Structure formats: C-alpha cells, structure tokens
Image (cartoon, rainbow, N blue to C red):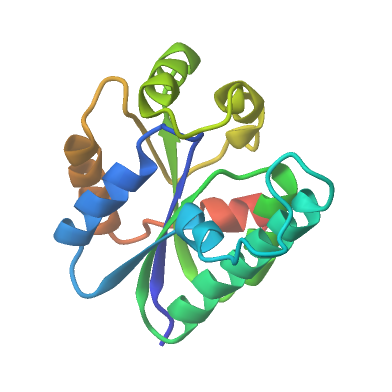
Length: 181
C-alpha cells in the first residue's frame, strides 16, 4: 500500500516548514515531515563546493533529485510524508515522474514578495535576493489541489485548512492534471 504525500510548494520563507510542523500534529496516522532543506543540510561540507562556487549547482541538483526519490521511497513503503520544497520547472517534472505511483496532494503555499523579503531579512540565514529569484518560478505551473496564503493566515490556520482538505475523498488530482492525464 502506498502512502500519501502532502507536497508543500512555495518560496523560501513562505511558511512551509511551520505548516509542516503543525500538520504533524493534525494529520491522522504517522506522517514524516521531510523538508528539502533538511536533506540539503545532511550533505558533508568537507570537499563539497559551497553555494555560489563552481561545482555547487551540480551537487545541489543531485541532492534535490535524491530528495525526490526519498519522498517516493517513504511513501512507497506505506508512510505518510509531508514534503517541503521550492520547485523549479524541471524539478516539478521529475516529481511528476518519480511520484507517479503515490497519491500526492499538491499544496501551494503563497506569500507576497514584500513579505518574503521582510521574513528573509528577519531570519538572516538566506542568501540575499533568494526570494526574488524563486518568486517568478515557484508557482509558474499554476495548478494545485489546495492553496493557502501565509500573509493572511497563520501556519496553524493553514495547517487546519489543509488537514480538513486532506480528509476529503478525491483530494488529489493536480499531479495527474500536470502530467496531462
């Protein structure tokens, strides 16, 4: 039996990790929260190119593709999974293929660019201009099963709405539509 994937997609600082933490308390049965950033932080730092240096993009790309396969593996074993991602178009294409056998509820986590900038400044742990680079592409595909805006609702409120949505039959269809099926 395949598990269910709640796939949170949004720009950095949009509130995905906060929503995922709340969902762990709300969703029935066991779910794993597996943020892409956590997988990225597991990589060794010794002899690994740093962000912005030659070779980093290739290492990062392999990390992200591996992350997609981790999500699929956990779900294929029957686990519930909460994914926390910032999708680029080619990563979405990879997810559509790799997660073909799993039920995926695709959730768009939105936040206006000025608020993302403010949050990133406040956090102080993100590269300058990250929100500007991600903002035009992260939601470019335009199709979700459910969407929320963290500038008008708290992470808890968004998680409650997502949990209610996930409890409904026929909850997941965006990945199939995006595949053209």
